[in-house]
Length: 132
Image 1: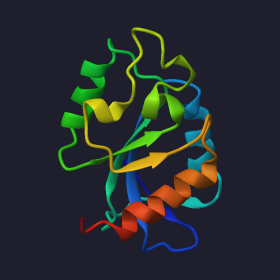
Image 2 (image 1 turned 60 degrees about the vertical axis):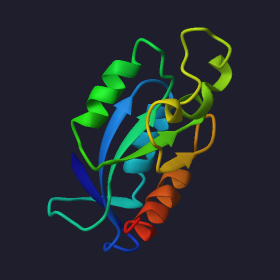
Image 3 (image 1 turned 90 degrees about the horizontal axis):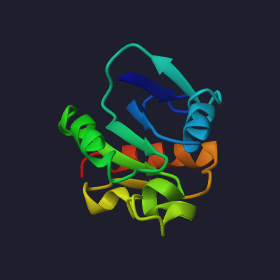
Image 4 (image 1 turned 45 degrees about the vertical axis):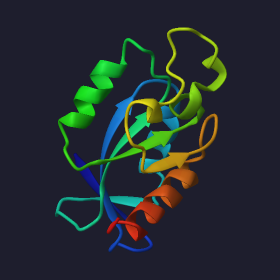
């Protein structure tokens, strides 16, 4: 995992693991490289987050679950319409209708694609709720 801190408030930090599955990955990378976050090497008190970005097909569900299980205690973020509901592919039989069908989701970032600043806002909200 890579730990990032908010440039505007370094006390807010998060470790990010990305399950980069489709085009939302580009927006996630834009958020991580926007200047709003800085990469830090030290551990922090912020939550660890697995970001599911993109379309999850039924065939990918076991791999996504394996990734999540390999980081116990890590929160899951659904990034974009496809990860949240299947997006424009919702009626395709092999497309999952949202990752919350098989794992608890701590944060949803809406959009197709989501804006990079929406990711930053979600990180801030997760940090505020870290005790929960």
